[in-house]
Image 1: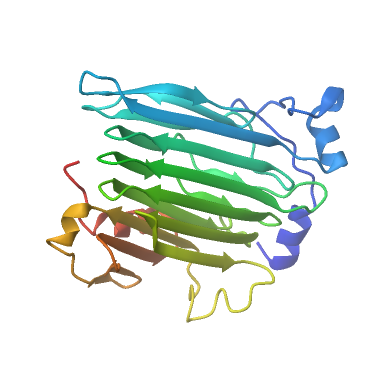
Image 2 (image 1 turned 120 degrees about the vertical axis):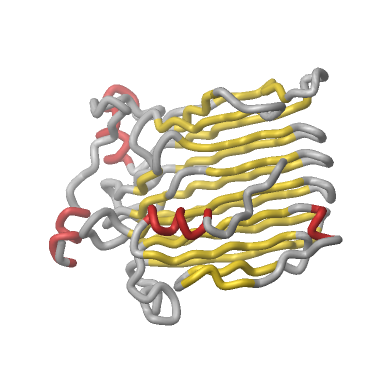
Length: 290
């Protein structure tokens, strides 16, 4: 698709749909539904909340598991002592003007695995407003979190700011995957700004901001993406790395493992598509026993 075609497509109003493809009512939109919310420029405000705690029997319980609007977290089958939560998209989101958030807490000694049922697609709204998607995760002493959402796809004409903040106790463990796809097939990307901040024991472990798409200088240059349309990273934080730190290594064209200044490593990957990015991240061999 040419750039003019992509821009023309981006101007077509997006109708909010549910999993079956039919229109759904938008919270706060009144009787006019999704169209009314888009016309008013209000967008959707929705928050999902997750709390994981030890159940006293060697497992993990979820005393709080709630969602709103497009964010529908569901408890799914897990292996071993962890609790597993899968995020299901109840309707199209984020659209321009939406304000989405996830608040998750893994209490001391608990184990949580978070994943998604499908990729998230950022779409343009009617008024051209920026959407935001903010995630806040805290992991307590002796706790473990595997935060493994599916990729975020930045569709033509969209404008999204995504933030993810993680607060780790000193003995917490974390595996976090973060993937973005810039544009759908044969389509220009929207504007996407992402920020990942990780604190461990009150100190900054990682603070990274990435920006792509229209209006971002040099985002597709050889020094940044070099024509690739998918980017991913895998962060592993393990207190055992203090005694046995990981080594830096190149996994192949567009992928590398980098030790951080703390008991952590960061795997980064660039590729033409999401499937190849996922394979590069998995090739790092960072699968843990916890």
